[in-house]
Image 1 (cartoon, rainbow, N blue to C red):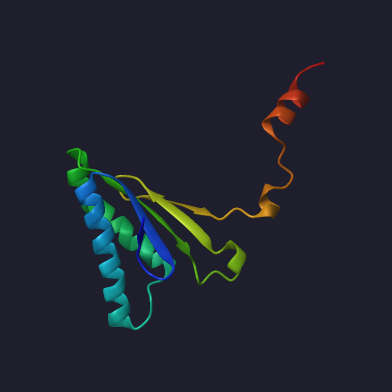
Image 2: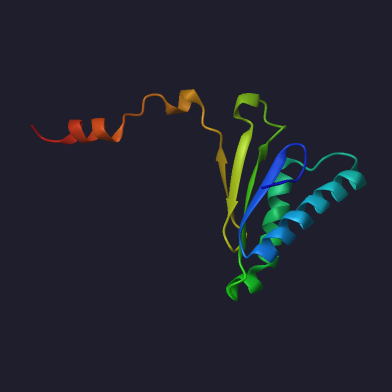
Length: 123
């Protein structure tokens, strides 16, 4: 895991040299953007920038030099701070899949697999 800024961290799996370069370059790009614009990049902007980096590496990935990042952070623009946590994983083509932080409320009402199997078996 590499701390990329105050609100995000990047983890990368795959070819070590490419993974380290992704993480370092990504952190530098975020810092550069903040210096130029005077404000930090939004979480969606961070996801888009990392997706572009992964897409630009597609040729090397097809030759076996793949590195797949995982972006974890807080979306400070989310109106509900309890749901601001985000985890985004990427495939080799740069498509990001976002997951929001699960809350206690969203986990309620779900039955365990053992309960479902007992209730669905004929008697």
